[in-house]
Length: 262
Image (cartoon, rainbow, N blue to C red; front, side):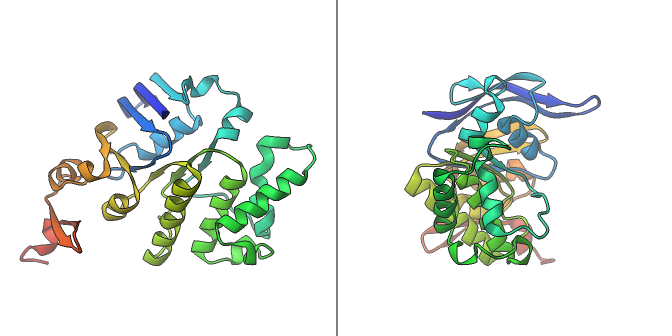
């Protein structure tokens, strides 16, 4: 089963090619990470998959249909997207934020029914936030706030989550907390998770598959074990990488960290 299939997809503005000739498959029920240097097209790929922009060339399929052929409401019932910088919600309570995820099911003027309340409470419980549900979002810690946004996606009822750098503003402890939560949701509920990451070791630890981009082109799309081999990471980032053994698992480090000037 596939979540996404891209056939020669690309995106360009008037003066710049952001993505070119991307062909790949994202398998359903897997955790897939997107890696690459800054400016490689990771967020553009995420926006293509989310249906926020249309490809300038090629096509993007979600669950067997072109993303553009889904109605906005139908797409939102199956696909949830968290941008790199979520909008500010000053003064909003956490439960109210999570409740926004139910919008695709009843619209702006529809009645918030029993099933909606159950979905919100279930999402708060699954993300470990039930005890914080009456707090204001902007008073939560970074990790709690990010879990709140993920709870909103869960309340949406989608079976595929797209997250653009969900750990970028978090310290290491909260990065592992959030990634561990996403991995559990994948394992326990069968959710498909696609996320942009920068830390190759966290990507190797929490992802099944990886997509590697450089300068708008696809470098690799394969299992996390294969993509995080030193030679492949060297090609991706343009610097020498080494694999260090730690408790039976390789840890990837730039060779420059062990040079004479380090």
